[in-house]
Amino acid sequence: MRKRIRILIMQAFVLTAVLHLTGAKGTAQQSQAKATADTSRILIGDHVNIVLELNQEKSKNFEFPVFRDTIIDKIEVLSVSPVDTLELEDRLKLRQHLVVTSFDTGFYVIPSFTFLDRITSESLKSNALPLEVLTLEIDTTKGITDIKLPFDVPLGFWEIAPYIFVALLLIAIAFFIWYYYLKRKLEPETLAIRVKPMEPAHLWALKKLDQLSKEKLWQKGKIKLFHSRLTDIIRSYIEFRFDIPAMECTTSETVAACGPVQEITDEVFSKLQTLLEMADLVKFAKWNPLPDENESSQQIAYDFVLKTKLAPVLRKSDTDSTVISGSPVKGKEEKNAE
Image (cartoon, rainbow, N blue to C red; front, side, top):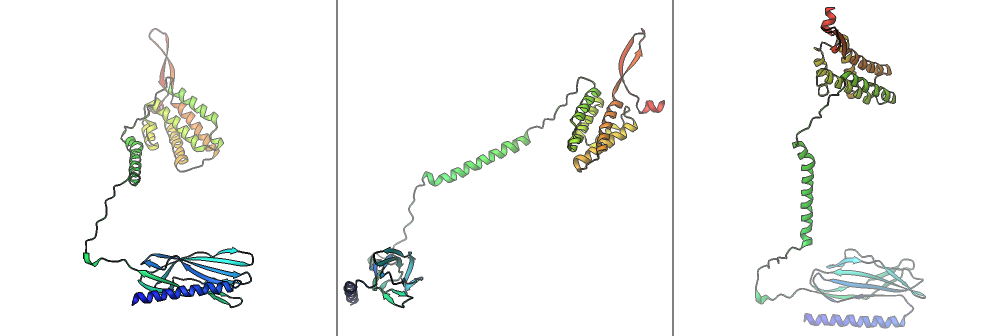
C-alpha cells in the first residue's frame, strides 16, 4: 500500500511538470521559475543539489527567496550559492544552487519556491520537488556482531619526519648550550699575566701618562675612559714599583696596601687616595667632575710617579771611584729622622 502511494505521488509530480512545461511554451514571453534536483532519492545524510532558475523580462525585478537553516522540517540547508545572471536579448536568466540534506527517513515534498517582485508585488512560484530519504538495509539474519578493530597502517617517512626534525633541533640546541656556556665554565680561567717592562717603572709610567695627556680624552667628553686609563697606569706603576697587585685589588685594598710603604709620604698617600676615589665616582656613580678636577687628577698621577720613583744617587767606593746606584727617595721615616 505504501509503495502504491509513492507511485501515485510520483505520477502527480510528472503530470505537474508536463503541465508546467506546456504552459511555459504558451507564455514564452512571461517570467518563469523552475526548480530541479539531481536526485529524488538519497540515503540518510546524503546531499541533494537543487538548482533554482528564473527566466524573467528585463523590466521585472524578481528576488530569490531567502533561505535559513531549513526549507521545511527535517530538510536542512547546507549551502546557498550567489545568484548567477545571464543577460539575453530582452530577458535575464538567473540561477542559484542549493545543497540540502536530511537525517530522518521518510518521503518529503519540498514545496514550491516563491519569487517576489517588490516593485509590482507580482510573484512567481516554481514547481515542488519530491524527496525520499532511505536508510541502510540491515541483514537481521546475521545477528549482532562485534565492532571491527581499526586497521594498523604502517607509518610513512613524511609522518615521522616532523618528529625527527624536532629531535635534531633539540639536540642542536643542547649542543649549543653545552659548547658556549657549560664548556666555557668548566675551562680553567686564565689570568692575564702582566709582564714587567724592562725599563724602570717610573719611565714606563711617565710615557703612558704623556700619551694619555696627548689624547685629550676628557676634553673630548670621554671622561670615564680618561679616569679608567689614568688609574690603570697608576695601578700598574704601583704593581711594577712596589710589587703590590693593585690591578686585581679594589680601591680600598690598594690604599690599605700602599699605607705601610715607606717610600710613599703622607702627602703623596693622601693625594693617591683622592685620585682613586675620584675615578671610582666617575666610573661607578656617573660623577661628572669639573675640568680643573680632571687636570688635578692628571697632575696628582704625575706627582705620584715622580715622588716615588727609584732615584739614582752617587756614592764613593773604597778606591775613590764614582759608582751610580739606585736608591729610593726619602720616605716617611727618613723625613721624620731629618
